[in-house]
Image 1 (cartoon, rainbow, N blue to C red):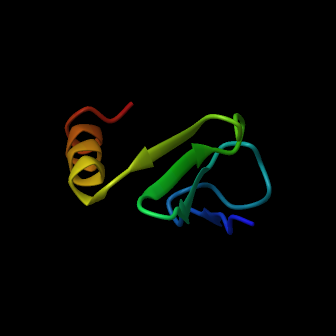
Image 2: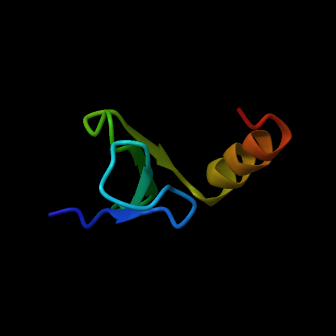
Image 3: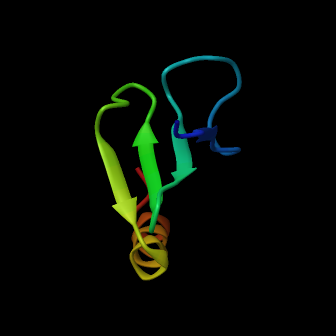
Length: 59
């Protein structure tokens, strides 16, 4: 079973507005709690690129 961890940047409480992370077999798994069936798989290089893009264009 996948062990999801809520991002420390997400709001407090048990609301549906948070990002969750988990380790996959060969990648990091990322999902939003309001759509848990949609999962993004990212390796180290892809995750670094995603984080750079999010920092440049926060919304």
